Amino acid sequence: SQQGEEDPQALSIQEGENATMNCSYKTSINNLQWYRQNSGRGLVHLILIRSNEREKHSGRLRVTLDTSKKSSSLLITASRAADTASYFCATDGDSEYSTLTFGKGTMLLVSP
Amino acid sequence: GAGVSQSPSNKVTEKGKDVELRCDPISGHTALYWYRQSLGQGLEFLIYFQGNSAPDKSGLPSDRFSAERTGGSVSTLTIQRTQQEDSAVYLCASSLEVVDYGYTFGSGTRLTVV
Image (cartoon, rainbow over all chains, first blue to last red; front, top):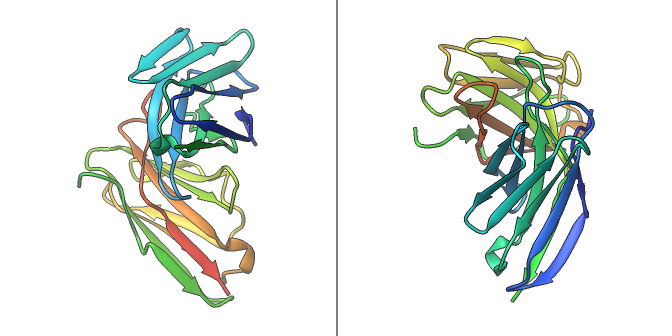
C-alpha cells in the first residue's frame, strides 16, 4: 500500500530558485527518508530524519518532519540544472522490521 | 564491492519464458530488498531478506515470482512464465540493517516482455 504521497507531482523552476517538495504519510514511523532518482534507474539516498527529529540539513538540502501532521518537506536551496530528477519520500512503519514504502515521487525540472 | 550490482542491466524476453535477475549487495549489508518500478510510477515492494531468510514475501505479485539469497550475499529473483505486465525496472537495494539505515540501490534491471 502507498504510505508516502509527494506533492506536487511535478515542479518546474529556474536555476537559483528554491524547490520545495512535500510528503504526507499515514501511519506511525521510525524514520522518513528522501531519495533522488535520475533517468528512471537506481535511487540515491539523500537524507534520513528520525521520528524524534524536527529538522535536518545536508548541504543545500533541508528536511523537516511534523509527526503530528504526518508530513515532511524537502527544500533544495539555490537549485542547479543538475538537481533535475525525481524525488521520493519513503517511510518505514514503527514495528521492528519495517521496510521502506515509497511514494510516487515529485519530478523536478530545473531550467538553466 | 563498492556498490550494489545488478545484472543484466537490460533483458528482453518472450512471453512465457523464465527469467532470472541477479543482485550483488554491498559486502556486510545484512538486509537486501527487491522492488519494481513501472514507467512513471513509484516503487512497489516485492520481498526483503534479513541474512538468508525472507521474513516478508507479501509483495510478490504471484506464485510465478520467487527469490532466494545464499551465503548472506547474492540474491536472485526468478520470474517464471513471464507475462507482459511483468515488464518493469527491477531494483535491488541493500542496507546495513533493516531499521534506521538508508538503502543503497543498484542501477536496476529493465525487463521487457514481448
